[in-house]
Image (tube, rainbow, N blue to C red; front, side, top):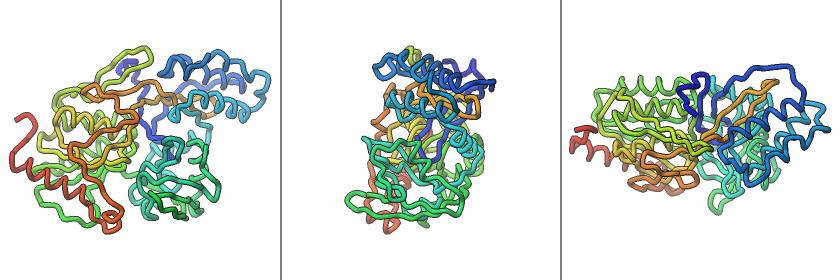
Length: 407
């Protein structure tokens, strides 16, 4: 797929979560029957899904499997969900109109819920990260927490869709999560609210003091279509600084376009990312020379940094443009495309895998930091951000050596 030849389409990197972070593709809406909706999904997966074996199965078996049973849209939704589940891919998923509307809301920059990204790892429902200033963050949820129960019901075997639907809800209502953190199990009752999705912040966490020559930029997501411009504005406003700390911790990802845009602001040359489709076709995105700064960079990542965050940090690491500090990232190296379906539903299909500039496939592996700094429970409790402190220490060394990129 050549993205430049498909201007109406945008590819996104998503972390499957209570807040779906992806963009919407438009197809024509037409008069249809439930069987038409089902067949539409079958055909899209047949021609687009990254694994041509469709999880080692004969995909034709599914095409007419439910022809006699689909009399309502709800029948089609159940049948589609069953068919898609056979791919055993948590990132390929059907979105009914309610979920599709939630997705639209997140792109516009707001949502109703507790503000938490979730994913499945080895059959467990895990927290990728809470959104900054969200009810989930204020309640104390952390990346890599395991959610054992939602409102008293076990999450064993639950799908991402069902978990997300149970966690989301109207503003003012509450949800209780039973959470396991290492060997400690604790319930969290959290009140849902409307959450404004903020992409960029310069607020330094935990009242840590940084030198005046450092610009701290927190990029909490790549969700909003304006995230790239917001980041550029902050970058330009801080051009009097001698170096930058870019905090991608607990950033679950978002739009590919944002990741590439921001990489171009920091990387004057070199490969940003490559994608490989089902036919083995490799497309490479290179820096276009629109760099805003060549000053020293340190990037902070952790186990909640996923997808587009890994694209950006991988590009800057492999091109030796930045020093990466923190913990190994989440490890999501797959690309999804969202297609609009009739009746305002949609289908999210994994269509490509991505590679860092060095050709590394990080799916289920993650980005390894140059300097590993882990935070203990005691560090978190005492708000002792040793990762940020180390990032500043490294940045000061780079500044003192005058290690601007390209010099």
